Length: 369
Image (spheres, helix red, strand yellow):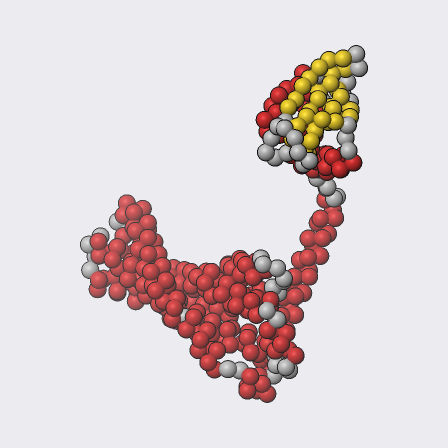
């Protein structure tokens, strides 16, 4: 249909107010009469309103939205539409449905709690099942050595260890620098700046070295494992391995866990050495000789501090790699699935690291270490 541009005319009659819309009520021309039409509908509040559409030549969803907006501006009083063809009435019905407020559905609070509890049990069960699959793969490893590729282990060790060295060194140096300076400021009031070397070295060996390394591993390596395995899951490569009679846990999970288990202690040692260097820079700035700082570190740190930190780092690495691989295996479908798996790996790795660190603290305390 063709016709002129849109126009609006309002008149009062014995049956109430009447607004006549004519011309083109489409996206191009309806905007010309939008404000006058709403003003006319608003001025007739409380009275019966008739909206005449008989002279409309072109009508689309923009015109339907204008009619619905006029009905809303008119208020709760009835509004009658005249001269409305079936197609126009259908468009207005769709516009009314889109403009109608949707009340948020609220289920009882108890149902949500039961559902969350069920999801928690299900997630714990999946985690135990994954742990069982890993243990079975370890037990069956002698018979499956042919599918365990050494090149994959070296590649993952390089990815998790060698490529992470610059980041580990930089973070360790800055942490030692900041920790030493922040500790020296209050201890300077008591003339105990010398003991900053003791504080920083023990903290790095026992806690900060393994913990910061694990956090870096979660953000860098666990997410990479989850994204890589998740992409294979989306592309049905894991299903292809199963159909060929190959165990995906032995081929994909064990090399990554072994690589993380071995490289994490070395990364922790690197971070600790870099942190000690940063601490030495601060102590040198306060006038202490490097020999004095070295003596304080050697005298106050023990073998149990160093070895205990390495054990924690190794366990952290294996757990973080397992969490990243499990997140990749649980990847769903859709364009967001791989990203969600990587996020779950990072969050799960950091939370597991903090929980395990608390367990180790209680365990070492019971052993008197």
